Image (cartoon, rainbow, N blue to C red; front, side, top):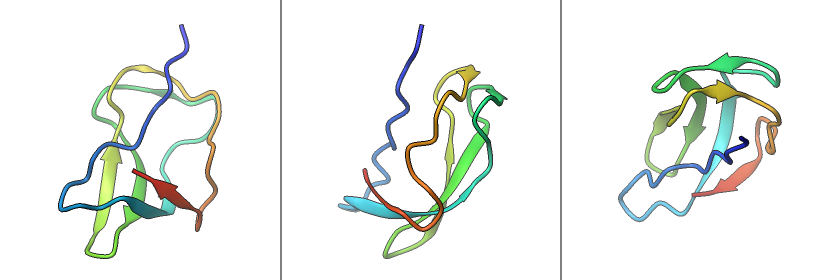
Length: 69
C-alpha cells in the first residue's frame, strides 16, 4: 500500500523549508526513523526522518525547492 510522506511540523510556526539534500533516492528501501532529507528553515538546518518503513517511489521536490510543511 502506498503512503505519502508529508513533511512533519518542524515547530516554531515554520510553514515552509528548502530541500537542502536528499539522503535517499527513488527505489531505496527505508526504515522508520532513518534520515531521508535535510531541510533549511529560516532558523535552522533540520534532518527529517522517515515516519514508517517502505520503499521510496517518487521524490516530489528537487534540491533547492521550497516545500510547504
